[in-house]
Amino acid sequence: MDIKMDEKTDNKKDALSRRGFLEMGSAAAVTTAGMLLTGVANAQSSTTGVRTGRSTNLSDPGPTDKPLDAANADSNVPPLTDAGGVATFKYPFSLSNKRVYEGGWSREITVRELPVSKAMAGVNMRLNAGGVRELHWHTAAEWAIMLYGSTRITAVDADGRSFVRDTHEGDLWYFPTGIPHSIQGLGPDGGEFLLVFDDGNFSEYGTVLLSDIVAHTPREALAKNFGVSQPSLQSLRGEELFIFQAPVPGPLARDQKTAAGPLPQSAYNFSFRTREQKPTRTTSSGEVLIIDSTTFKASTTIAAAIVTVHPGGMRELHWHQNADEWQYYISGKGRMTVVETGARARTMDFEAGDVGYVQQALAHYIENTGSEDLRFLEMFKASHYEDLSLSEWLSHTPAELVMAHLNVDKTTYDAIPKEKPLIVPR
Image (cartoon, rainbow, N blue to C red):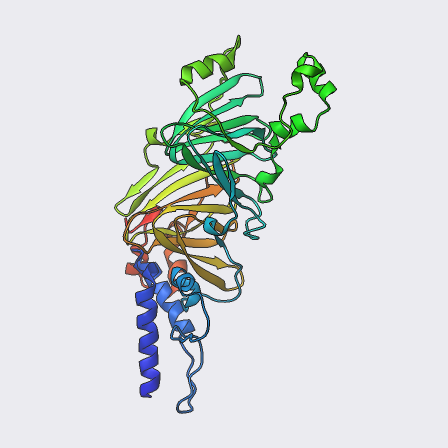
């Protein structure tokens, strides 16, 4: 009897102390989580000394990657609420192969690295001051956020008019499929940015490059196309550039004037200044800035949210009914539980540079488990942002029905937030 009581007490204490999830500020969630933990508590045999069922107490004396285990505590010792087989929904950019060139580098996470990520892919790129991502276009739309430094972007719209802008940390840009563009690092130290594409099969190896067009088009066709003689094209490069080093560009106004020529500049604004926007929702535990086609008009196929969660806070339990969610963690540490169909769930840990993925309409939360702000992106292959909150759903369902499901009293039901706070506690 002492063995059973001690183990049951230890399991409850461990589950409650390891899972800050229970501190979400919703009394209903506390009660529900408690019921779930009770349901998965260790089943005990009446035979003395025999113990069965799930546990968080383990030993691992064999070979193991201890730093990796420590960085993925919830995979190494899963919470008792995890259940069934759930595919990995995390991949760190640190494991991605870098393509390093004079002028900068690039690395990517696609469906090949993260098989669950079928709708979207991402590229992390760094350009030195003067470094150029050569003139190119994609077979997918490109959404980007500046993570560090400054770059100059150029494009030509569908009407053949030029767009040239300088971008700085926090700025966004969006280039629709087939729109040719370039990126160049500015002084003093170039820039680093994240590119997100609306196709999980996308790869930087599949980009349409100016250097490839020139190298694989007969010289006589190029001469006829440009209206020049073939001898004048003898110095054309024959190799792919991708990223290369060039001088730092001059004044923005000069490039804008030169690129425009006799035409007016593009009427389309392919860039967006997040620093000029107020957060969509702010609570004592953090803030969310939603950016979709209603605010960033050019971004017609990708919607986003920039989320900041203070220590002890949590992006509330919710789901997205219109699209899969592709995540990028900018700073801080956190954990996410994804609840799948068929009574399956998995919890994974995240930190700066990690990519996460949640399939459409699956419930999940993201909790700050560190001592500094947790900042991450929520990205969607959609023209507009949509989500539904667990609290919002339950608080707008007849009380008696919810109370019967959760086995809670009216006081607990009344404590559920009536409007989705996005970040909890409020």
